[in-house]
Image (cartoon, rainbow, N blue to C red; front, side):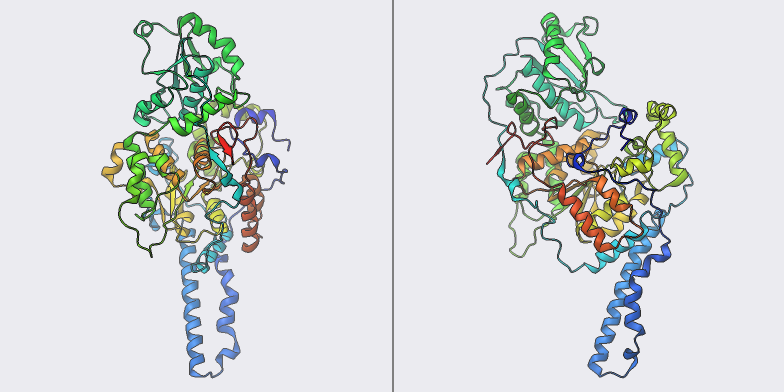
Length: 611
């Protein structure tokens, strides 16, 4: 496709997943238009006509047969009524005041979006938007109501390929002597959110080993976007980090006294992201950074976002990256304890220890085993959903999401404030159209598309869903289809009391750590954007510690776009089959491709052993 041009690569930071690279380009199309809400009961017309229109039913019947007919009629009326109620809630999605949202009413993150739009002067008097994918949502509602008592697909809650269980964690194996750190000291002040900072920490650990340098405990850069003053010790256990890495590198809490007074910028020891190429190879650091260490005894990396290549790297250094990510970084007890509480509540206090619990919440995993489990007690499963549909993601994507001219104005105003370089690029360069971007799988899945995917995969209406990262563009009204079809949807804000969540308020990284714990421990984890750093880290943890049993849904957005574009004509059965096939193909088990992140793809000889 010609739209995948150099000009496009200048602004798009979306990354394809491994499976996307193997797919052929699908044709572009105009954006889908919602159908008339009056069509919503068409699926029942044949059934109603058969039940009440048959002449045979007006003939006199024996009493027992009349009772059976009356019972059938009552069942059909109740069934149609249930579907009508579900669909009426979806059609009223734009009028949030007419719909009850039991689980999201305390979600502070949706309020922040509203405040942001009000600040831009665009949040007042918004007209209710028409429901996107109205026809398919009607069919999904029908299918969910019809399938209340049907069993779910047998592999829905499990990994379909047995070979996944042959990979075992082995990053803890060491085959070298400890580094003395004699070449000087490395300071890092990592930027971004908790996920980018986590990757930066593990990358700087690898750099310290490569350069035989001593690492000062990492620091985190305050961001005007995240507005979180949390430092390394507020999120991760410092003592564990220092002690665990002793056989690998030397870690200290602060610089020696004689180096603390140095003006690092003045002496040339301040290294910013502008000074280091993206995905820099080990040779770059040995050629340009090691001489600075030799001269000044200290180097300060400021930012350090994505500044170490995945390959080529010495195998033992690559293993050190895995060791850091999966073993050295443990959350502080405050986060572990609350994370364990959230997991217990998602499992409805059923006594069960998941395969990742002790790796995520440490000693607090013992609380999962309190009490005795009754023999008749069902295993409480839950699905964790990371919906990447925040306003910054939506605005930066340059896609369209069914809101018409009003939405385009909103997002353009947001871009002018937060992405001025992108606005200038649009003026000087011909960029791909929204339809072309969607066809290429470069648009985040909308909530309406997400709920259609879950329904097509076979998750029943009673499925408990944990929604992570709930800064959803459009707020509660945009989630109407999801909360209507899946009423057992919750967030950390609705699961925790005000006193339980209060210690984490105003600390976005600590709140994100709670999401990380609950999503990683989930029976099934579903993401809507495979390029998300959060989703990559969560799925990597599930692969590394999950024993091949932790199912992950990583949709191929390009293939789904080809399915959604037929929303006005496709029948539900065909839609189900195509979605299931598209998702199943992304679950293939393969070793880490060259150049891809070990944090996301730990199935490689440096991190895991194939037994």
